Image: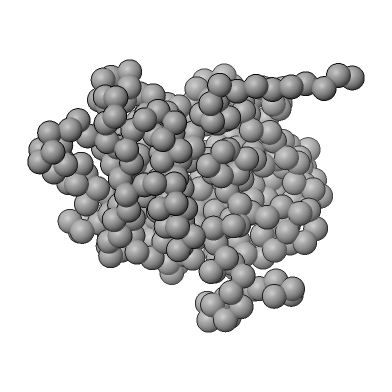
Length: 337
């Protein structure tokens, strides 16, 4: 058996084609095969590398960005990291608007990668001070005042987001499971991953079940179950997931089932998998894994379920391994801290 030597032209070529990892404990617990798509292996460390690449490629094809141009985006961090990585490789400048409640480690990464960072107070979407709206206004102001073509990525309502997942993530999952996948689930932030994978998989086989897994403090569980956008539970400690409106990326989403995961369940499964399987995953991955477990229990033994392992725990030390913080939130903590 020879040694395969892989040569890539640039770091962008490392985005995507991530492996599936069988999750032993969730699989044994449910009698199903539960797999996590290891998106934390992308070069920027998260699934948002795909979002960034899809949006930038689409902008280039539509001449919305020019050489040495500027890209502006509002993000909780991972999309900003993905955009900065892609933009640096392509010669674009990145300006990020971020809520000031975001993990300090994400801010540090962005600054260290050379992005220009603007921190704003965390405000709801209908407030003009919301980070998404601030970023859109900033992009327009820069283009007008500096006379430089400036592209606002707009990940929440830019449908290039979900279409890239339809073309890549969904196809990879189907191929990696040899077409034997029975169900897919993940949480909603922009809606790009769930919609793209749902459209991609159901275009191949309409019998594949799609589930929304929702974190506490979000409205998506109630939307898919009860048809309203009422939030369920208190605000979550997770970042980058949870949604209170129907984004343009969600308009084509096809959902068969919906599950609610609270922070206690999320943290409990994360610490279990660190200890027993060596998987050092971030909080959104915990929500996804618990959703996959609930989906497997509802669908019954023998099914093959796939979810997304969005990123690792390295960006979340301040919450995940802060005993005092966890106790204050009445959440479990690992016995080794």
